[in-house]
View (cartoon, rainbow, N blue to C red):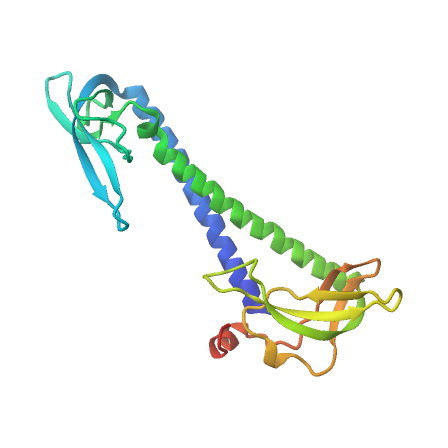
Length: 246
């Protein structure tokens, strides 16, 4: 079962690293924007053009082109860092402009979106990716802790094979893992239970044993269980390359 663990761990680590990198980028954007606001000169400019960009679906986005004059009389044009549809400004609109004296071409319209939109996007994306990786870390650790506990303290039972299902609640690179489902009837109350295995990243159908499958359960709560998959090959990655996918 090592390949599955490595695959999930690799994805989790990539998500955590990407999330941290994006959040570090958002901190950098925050600091640079704050510095820009500290050193920038305030003046006014005029919208002289609306630059248009068109996406593949035919929709258009309008970007204001602003012209302004620096303190030393230099005439500068720049394109706003935020576009919209419908356009946020009309031709001839007068807008506030912030610009650094040493780099007047790096001017920005003095608006919340122009100054903070990129920071908001990067922060939101970084938080989402990091939270997803953190969730995988938490739930993966929870599954491992449960399996370890049941191996030490669980009751071993024998269950009948029920089915192989695709777990559509989880996906990696567009592929869904499989789960082996087994059925067991509690001899104490004759209640039937369906137990699902951990995720398996290849179709395990041809490896299902002819007899029963071992399951470890908590004595007072059969819903806490661990399906023992020691009958599956260790090298799941090579098997998954050989077997057709559903």
